[in-house]
Image: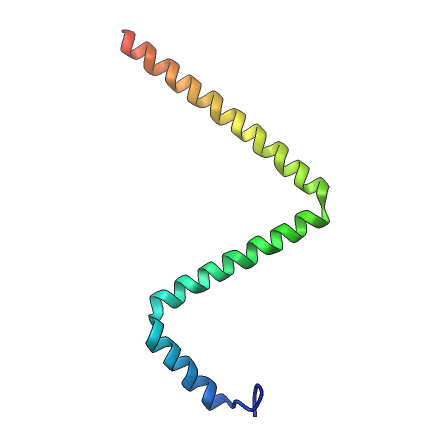
Length: 85
């Protein structure tokens, strides 16, 4: 006997029926979504436990954002210079 009176044979039958109803593609998507949710939950718990880590992540994100903005400005300036030529 397994989980609450359900044996291994019954579990296999249930899994086969679920597989036939939903198909492998939907089950794969469901598994990926569930994994992403669990990963996000774990990340939130770690950030709650380590507020210093959260502050470091924010600082590095702000630096990366500033670099991206600077690179976009340079691209716009060079495209305007090329248009003027």
